[in-house]
Length: 460
Image (cartoon, rainbow, N blue to C red):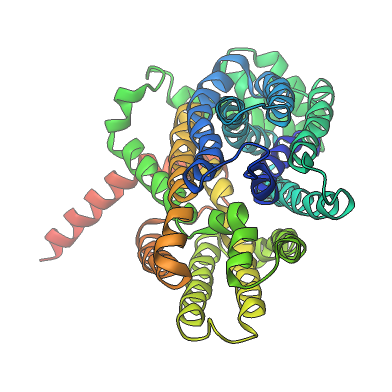
């Protein structure tokens, strides 16, 4: 299964590499980018990812999870090569958009594939393994950026080497996925019952367990047999609408914490705080290392905490770190320790983000969205992830230059407080429940509430 998570590695490298490549790319003798152009180069990938998340969800329903990942690997490869060879700002925008399509498609398809193929007790670990690969990709991008900047100091084409490296894991993903099975749930949904059971017998520990899971999938789909395939019109159904509003809400709030201001513009933030350009590139690798360690720690936290509790802890921790960045930027910006203070606080922020929020977003989405809705619903939620991401990527350089560090991060603090309230009020618990049990609870939520109201009225 580790091969399928190379989609996450590509996701991470492609979104993180721009952090170090952008200052070199912007040079007058290269693409000569203005601050607005920089924001466009960063955010166009995110706009492509938003589009790719919608298309990727539908394509994974049509082609299968496995086949869709194989197609994405091809797109990753050629788009990465195109970015590294872009002769102009306009060509860079086109190739970055294509790369974004692959990133968005991977963000939908890979967690869905992992959730559908994993046994219940390992589902959380396997889905968050994808998040681990995402932050590993970002860390590798930061490390490669720093190494290339040091080894090839003075070479005007440094940024091209940084962008080209991503073609290599795309090849690993392509050839590796050729050897993996299709999702048994997708096969069942397409009427390929014998193939579905055959895959379950291969990937489960015993024949009896495979048959029991096969029967559980069959029972859930038989309950839905009189219903047609969900379309956009069906999103108005109360239980479906509730799922989508919760999914969209956590999708937006996890991005509006400002995490990607650090992942995309970490070098610029540290430079503005007082580091040299090379010093900022090296210091930024600590942000990447923190993310990797935090996601690894997330595996432990998942065994101890409930999903909802873990996400609440994440929003509380990130909001606190952002508040400290705001206060430090306002009151201590002239202090000689200010650059190191900002570095330490971004590390604290990422520690909470990646141990409690980043992995949990994709895990919770993969758990609350039911099988028949998964391609469409996951795609819609991922669309909002990337659109929120797009907004942050586009406006952050402008906010940073016009408002400064303090007011920019103060805005993220306010958003964080709203996110805490939303999570506490609306996010259900999913840990320790099968995907079919979670779906059933959503389907009968309104009925339970109505029955409770009737009982209350009767008691009066």
